[in-house]
Structure formats: structure tokens, C-alpha cells
Length: 156
Length: 421
Image (cartoon, rainbow over all chains, first blue to last red; front, side, top):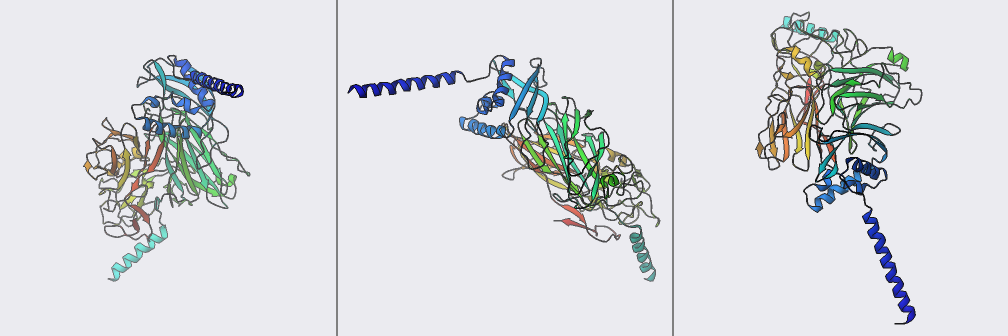
């Protein structure tokens, strides 16, 4: 191998090593549910605010449901699509409630969310949508996950 | 023969001279009307949006709104003016997980529409009905009460809401409802009543008319009862239970029965599914609703029977039974029948499918159709959702009633009402 070819091969190898290192570094920084409820709540809503909905999905209790990977991926896809139509602009964690104090054993966290109204086929209010309510969280295997309250009142 | 003809002519003259008014001539979905009613819920991060559109190109319309909880407690009422082709909207939000709500106006105020509101939207009120997840639920009604050549003229008038005179309101509006949570949203057109006639603040008088005959709405074998109105005064009409019916013949302020002396009034439902049995004991107005009930999907049946709590005052008026003890049916997708039962005596029923108390017990059927038998005038729909999506479907009514004829009395059966199909 000529000197020039050797140097070129070495440069490509070094480049691959650098790219690989960066990739590992970014994965190591991924935000995940933790043992701290306060940290989990803040991280979850920060991800939503930063439009990192795919990472926010892994904070949902539904993301660890006992389903096949295909079904979970389908749920995730629908979640991403739905969440993208109602972006979060800002949030405030007002109060962490007593653990397990909700009627169904969940833990209430009072939050204030500021976002957009969804694009429904009717005249919608102007300006931001401001909500203040008791969000619900559940501790599963030492990590805190967000509970979705559906329109039917079902806990997902 | 001559005497019979003479009496018949007298009857015709009386009918025509007093004028006739059904409480509503029809309730056809997706068609403008003079009154509207729909379900609302708020809480656990959810809001309800109510939007009213005027379809009148030249008239300023006064609309009276009233919010009721799931037990028909009157929560709040107000009136608003819609300019020609105007749009008016409110947001109903929860303030806590125990039924507290607020109502806020989000109208545009465009083009000289001052949208004056009576009262003080924004102050909190409390629903007595809410779920364990903190969702307060009830219903809202909107009734055209007056119109004029300006908002000040309309707001100062009350042509379609009087003390004793009942007049049909023009079909000037339609209404939409949206439910928005922090993760899902859906919207639908609401139930609209066409040719809606408010009975006035003096209520429904079951007295005999000048011909000495009358009928009875509540099966108590007399025609002397009075059913009070839930209107908020002259000019501020609400929807009473008897205004949700299409009557074969209803001459105001008396009732002219058409089924022979001493028998029930011949009425059928305007709101919801009709029936053709005649009399106040229906063979069963029926509805179809699709459901899913498994680990991944959940369906809730929502039904609203406006002013149902008023009906017990009507004694044995059988229509006051909402979801209690009725002969419902259920089928899976292979048409195999299952058993179904439920108990819900309230005005607003938020009924899950499952095996618990006050649930529609579907046994091993995870998906299928339920065929409901609900005599009282109702509106209803099902919400089916998963963690990632939600859908809403109005109930299918097996038959609807539309008043279409000249109001002549007949012995038995219906003459002036067309049933579709």
C-alpha cells in the first residue's frame, strides 16, 4: 500500500471512530423516566416543549404495555401524530401530590400547561390554551410513568 | 250526517282559529333549528367548546343558553346576540376535580357584533355530577328567543318566549360541540330541533279544552294537570321535556286529544328515536351503538335525557325511564346475541361497557353492537378510544318522526306525523 493510500485509509478509520463515539454519546444523553417523580415530570414536559415527542412517548405508561413490538410501534406512531397537532409552549409544575393519593392509586401532580388549540373543523378560540389540572403518574418498577386520562375517563 | 259534518266543521274551525304548534316538528341531524342541545364535559385536562352559527342573512338573533349538570341542576344561563351569519362560542373548563367549572366567551366581536351577554361569564359554578377521574359532565341548551333588526332590538324582544303564548322560533341556528383533552380532540354537530315552539313560562296545561275533552300526558286518567316550565322567565326559554315531543295535535293552551275521550295524548319523540304504538307506553324507540371493550380500546355510551327529573312530576309518564330496566339487546360481530343490562336513572348517563355496577354488561363480547330501548327523548353517542386516538359516533335511531300534516283529530294512530323510515 502506498503512503498516500495508507494515510487515506487511516483518515477514514479515524472518521468512523469519531462518528461512532458521537453516536454513543448522544444515546447516553437520552432522557428517560427516573426514580424521581419531580425529575420525571419536568423532563417529560420539557421534551414535549422541545418537540421531542418520540422521547416523550417513553415516559407514557402505555409505552411499556404488554403488547407486541409491532403493536407498540403502531401506538407510538399514532401518539406522535396526535401530539404533533397540539404542541406545548410552556409548563409549570405547581405541586407534587401525595404518592398514591388518587382514587385509583396514581399520584397527582398539579401542572399548568400552555399550548395551542387543536385544528378542529370549527371556529376555535384565539390565543393559547391554558390548562391547570391534576396530572397523574404511576411508579412502575421504580420509575415514574405518565398516565393518560382519555376522553372516556379511561386511564391509559 | 248533517250533524256529524257540522261538528267536524266546528272542529276544523277551532283547530285553525287557535293555531297549532308542536313542541318541535322534527329533530333532523345536521339541519338548522330553533333550539339545540348537546352534552358537555370538563376536567382532568379537558375542555368543552360550544359554537353556534347563525344561518340567517338579515336578522339579528337572540339566543338563550343554559348549562345543566348531569342531574338537570340549573347551573348558569345567559343570552347572546348573533348578527346575520354570526358565530358565537364559549369554552367550558373545570377549576378542580370535584365539579367546579367556568364558562368563558370566545366570540369574535367582529363587524359591530357587540355580543352582549347577560350575567357574568367566567365565575365558577359547580356540577354535582363528575367521574372519579375528575370529569364534570352535563349538557347545554340553546334556544332562539327573539330576533330583530339590531342586537339592541333583539335583546329587548321575546317573540318566541312568552308567558302564555307559544310561537315557533325560526330555524336560525346550528350548534357544534368539541371535546378537547391534553392529548385528544373531537367535534360533532349537535342535536337541532326544527320548528321549536316554547310552551311559555306557564308550562303545559293538560286542561280540557272548550269542547269538553282532553287527554292526559301522565297516565293518571285525568286531563287536569299542569307541568311547570323550566324557562328562566319570559324571553329566556329553555327546553322542557314536553317540548322534545312531536304531538299529533296540540292546540295551545289546551290539549285536544285525538284518540277518544279519556285516553293518553298521542305523542311521539322529536328528539331521538320515535315510536308508532300511540299513547304514552311505547313499543320501544330503539338505537344502535357500536362498541369495543378490551385491553386496547374502551367505549363509553353517553346519553342525555334533557329535563328527565322533571318528568316524575308527570306521575306515571313512562317515558321518564332512561336506561333503567329496559329491554336492551347486544350482538357480537357474528350476530350472536349476548345479555346486557344497565341501571342509570339520571339525565346524563356516562356508561362504560364492562362487568361493573352501572355498566353495560357485555359478558364475553369484546366488540359488537348494542340495540338500546330508551323511551324518553334522548340524544346520544359513543366515544371509542385507545391511548393514542379517539372516535365519536352519534347513535343510530331506527326511526324519526316529522310533523307534516294538517292538525286534525283522529281516533287512534298518527295522522299528521310522518315516520322515517
